[in-house]
Image (cartoon, rainbow, N blue to C red; front, side, top):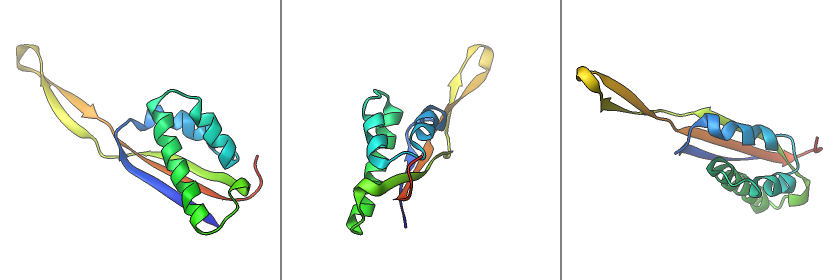
Length: 112
C-alpha cells in the first residue's frame, strides 16, 4: 500500500529541488531522511518535510516504518507569479517567480 504526501505551491523552483528528489527515490525511508538532513539547502528541507509527512501518513495506518521505501518522489512545476521590471528606454523585463509541487509516496517493498 502506498501513502502519499504533497506540498503544493512550494515557494522554490522545481529545478532546484529535483536533484534531491532523484537522490532519495528508491531508498529506504529512514535512510532518505538521514540523507536529506545533512544537506543545508532549502530544497532538501522542503523535501524532508514532505517525506516526514508521508511517513506519518503510513504510521497512522499502523504500517511498520522500518519497511517503508520511497516509491515515488516527484517535483513538478507550478504556476508562476509574473511581474514587470521597468528597464532603460521604456522597455520592460518579465520577472518570473517560480513555484513547484512536491509529491512523495512511500510504500512497503524492497529497497534498491
